[in-house]
Length: 254
Image (cartoon, rainbow, N blue to C red):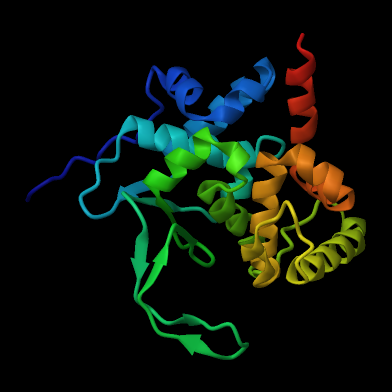
């Protein structure tokens, strides 16, 4: 009988802080307690989820650490259980080509592939697919207002109730009416061309709206807070974080 040794689970490298300092702009905004908690979430994400690479891509410590830092930032005010539906993270070197038919712009229609994607969150317990070159650039340049890791992991939060409708499980039942009112209004404004600083991509449907709003909440918080204060507030209440306050804290100094 032939025996196989199980590969030990991956862990964060000893120099993970140096990797995050160099590659994740948001690190400079966090205080000491937030950095410590982020590291614990990153460790769990690296060790407890299955990491795979596509097309012979080298899955290095830098790749896992940068993606784990970005994904963990979303749940910094929550806890690791919010990623219970994330079983695998598949990293592609660059854009992802998908050949399966996709829903078309008109409800009930399908479009034939191939399609070029920067990321994908599969339904239920499916994997999260990430294009590394884009994720690496996004992590260093939050002012661009987009982040493929934030986007796809926000979809995973939305999917926790098995419905991709732009509404993740909220903390209190009474939060629902305001969430739906604000997000429905802002989705319509985005479709009417009045969505700045949200990307137009979020106008497709409520699920994409939530993912795009998440990108703006973390990457352009001051702009979002000023332009759309009610949307900023419902996102702050869900994520239990205040990225705008972090930026103001850095601006004023110790």
